Image 1 (cartoon, helix red, strand yellow):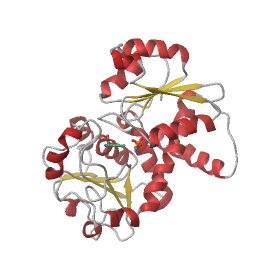
Image 2 (cartoon, protein in one colour):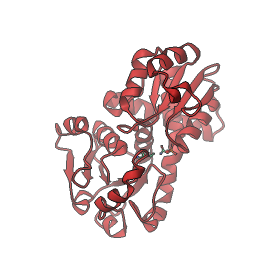
Image 3 (cartoon, helix red, strand yellow):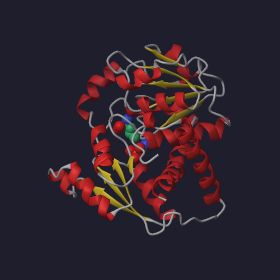
Length: 300
Ligand code: CP
Ligand code: NVA
């Protein structure tokens, strides 16, 4: 594994390996055991979209491993003024030991990896959010004790989170059902990957999709870059809310995850959010541990 670009690229072993190391790093951090695995190394973090969790967890994670992180906003970089991603890749490869990038088009991340000579980590594109899904799988395993055989249900938009959860969930032996309105399905490449297995179900009806689910997940109806579609999406996603009534149909000990930020009253009610706040904020914390494991694996 040279980069972390999308869940489709990872094997089951890659994922389990990262989760095991993430668990170890979490335990060690809580017990005061320090590491300098990445001493002297620098990670550049390119942000073309906003972020709270990704920015802070990568920056702190790099520091905790003995290295440093540079926050590079496209408002300040020459990329923002049209310098090609190919040139940026070749320049940054000469200074840095790794790049994390949050951007729109998946092809920018792929190009960065192809043209540059250092590990590239996808910190979210319109297509994929692998760091979040690794943290989600870590959280599920931590709470449920296993991944294999559990049922995951994602209700909402066929966005970066749905794309990545379908692939990640299936790869670790979960069954995955999704409910989305017509016209908001996951990416064709993800459907193609998933349709090879009976463990995948794509439905319109959230009530049916969530039946006996062990893990119920949602995300915003309008992702970053889709702000102008907010009103239209609010109509399209009516009925795709995680609320108490829907949760009645999930397993009685089901957990709820949300990558955050959450819009209470839209994709999730305040009631469900608060009942499941402990798993949701554990999930947010696990970004730190999972990404430290990824950085150590790629940049050591
Ligand atoms: N979940 C997530 O990626 O959060 P940020 O957008 O705050 O980084
Ligand atoms: N789907 C959301 C995830 C935010 C972390 C977005 O892309 O804006």
